[in-house]
Length: 172
Image (cartoon, rainbow, N blue to C red):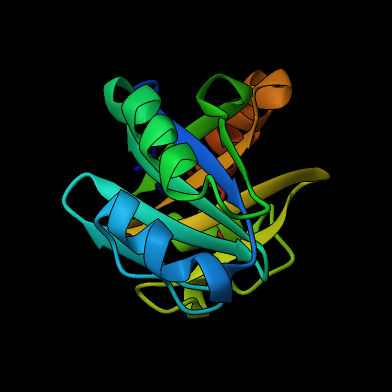
């Protein structure tokens, strides 16, 4: 029996805090509240179980253990209380999947128009999986893909189908 291209696992224990603000003005306060350096554009910063993801020029996503999301949301809201900012726990709005294995990028290549394999180790990409908006970043030798929970079952099915044994793009 052929081996799957990647192992797909739904990540149910991730917390996610959306941060919208003027990142130049609020960067020091965000870094202090999260304990992470500010990421460059299209990059992530990880320390242990926390990752701070650059999502757009005025948006970051803090990914951390779900049990820590409420406290982190409050710390960020307090740190940004004098700024025009939005801090929102979006943990229950998102579905997240780990895509792991030597050919994980190949499984994603079937679904995404972006060259995920070329993404740097600290890179993040907003793109689509089939026609579903998603964010993808590297984690270890694999990837994490997040999308809206309302289409989480669909995303999971897409990923499992793309990783099915015998579906290699280049069987060589």
